[in-house]
Structures are given as C-alpha cells and as structure tokens.
Image (cartoon, rainbow, N blue to C red; front, side, top):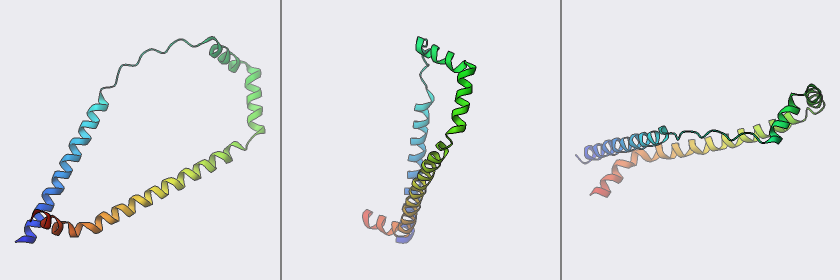
Length: 119
C-alpha cells in the first residue's frame, strides 16, 4: 500500500511540475508577444553619407578587393574562434548530460523520499 501511495505521489508531483512549467512558458511567451512599436531611425549624419559615397566609388571598391586578396590570414583567426566556441559548447553539453544522468539516477529513490517527508 505504501509503495502504491509513493508512486501516486510521484506521478502527481511530476504532473504538478509539468503544469507549472507549461504555465511558466506560456506566460513567458505571452510577455514576449507584445513588442513595442519601433520608432523611426534618425537621419544619417553627414559623415555616414560621406562613407557610403566613398564605398560606392569604383576606385575604393577595387582597392578593397585587392586588400582581400593580400590578407587571407583573417579566416584562420575565425577558425580558432569557431573551434574555441565549439569546445565550449561541447563542454557545456557534457555538463548537461552529466546532470541529466544524475537526475535519472535519483528518480528511483524519489518515492521513498516523498513518503518519508509526507509521513
């Protein structure tokens, strides 16, 4: 009888947690749904207009293309940053997996603990 009561309490606890999670996610999505109306951007300063004019100049465009051909070392720095980000993500995923395994290992003892707490 006690093990049946423990399992019933476990199921009810899990349902309660799922309900709370669903309500929390619903409220979070509702709060994000009402976006404020964007204000129009102020006009561009004269220096920005000058920069755009320079970038449209064919001589400047040719110089930029030439500079890209001369300095191919930038992709190596990006690959280092990408590999660092990948290793950080991998480490975080491993930590999450360990936490999930610990939670799964604790599940069998949960009914007994709930029974002890509730008397």
